[in-house]
Image 1 (spheres, rainbow, N blue to C red):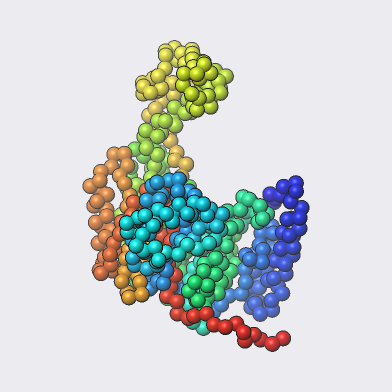
Image 2 (cartoon, rainbow, N blue to C red; image 1 turned 120 degrees about the vertical axis):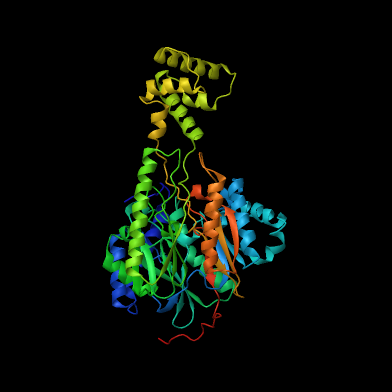
Length: 531
């Protein structure tokens, strides 16, 4: 168990200890919680480090649902989460967010969740919107919602929406933090981004109740679940991946019970998640497009500059696709399954790989030459210290290879790589492993229908990589458009450049969530039960 407590934080720790005590009492003190749910909550609380839950995060009683809302039903608002400090520093991310907002704001209102500790950056972000020719006229359709969010992925840490038997809107708040001791920390001290992102559904609930007067309740479920790894058709079918099962301790019985009690699931389907070091979320390869129609990403196209590791990943993804397709055909034979093309994984370009190779060589050579690498990489050219470091490195490579090495010359670079790494350029590129497997998927889209049943579909656009042609990507986009328009022939399609957001780990579907139509307004709470 890891405790992030400073020497002067005794008083704060006493507060946390008090929260722990109250947390441990909450699940068992409420006799109104059905016994099955009490058992689920109790097992979860007892299995986690003390202090993992607080009164704001401990699971509570379920609310009986009529159904979950599927993505394509009419929406009141589209919510997005914007880390305004990060976006303000990255022009490509800013362009992505503004493109998204231009497409949506003219169709339905937008609620932008931001971190209340980043007000200074929020002001700059709002200024960009006001000065934008398209968005400036729509500023009254954009709300800025105070919260604690730290990232883009509101789909994951935001709520799922259900309709209660009483006709109220129910926000289902699953656990976003990892269920292990590494996820524990003092919630009053940083680092706390996961803890604070986990509170997003409560900020959303507050926003809907205060700004829209919506009769809504937040139900905290005893389940680790990211929204990107969850899909529902509104008819009782819910889909998760093997990853969600694994992260819940591979306890299939408890997982099914939680999904049935809290999410109203009638049939639970477990598919295989994406392969590689990536977000293990179904929305990167699977989408329920309408009742009875599913989109499934075909295996990604092979890249001409792929390495042995990337080819292994592609073979795994072919198997994942085949297994998911067979499962759907076997268990849901009445559904229509459409395969969408998938671009190659977003990989490090050859030029960037070559630069990394240079960096690895310089790291080894600087150690041998007893030179501070920071002087070489960050020092000011022309200074005695910088010139001495360069001379020492040049001498070391001369002694090591027998020739004067220019790392910008690939023949010299190849020689240096063989001498210091034991592998030349070709072998280095062949065995290169991208730190992340970045999936670029056309299933990671957003379908938004407004109050007058007009539909827009936001689609991610990707760029060709080394050895690929724009013509190939144009052809894939035509197939994607045909597939979506076959289900929504009157929809307006909006393509949004998404390679930059993909580098962060997701795309359009990951960073947005639609709020269903508000059906019931907030009522008085004056009539309380006696005693």
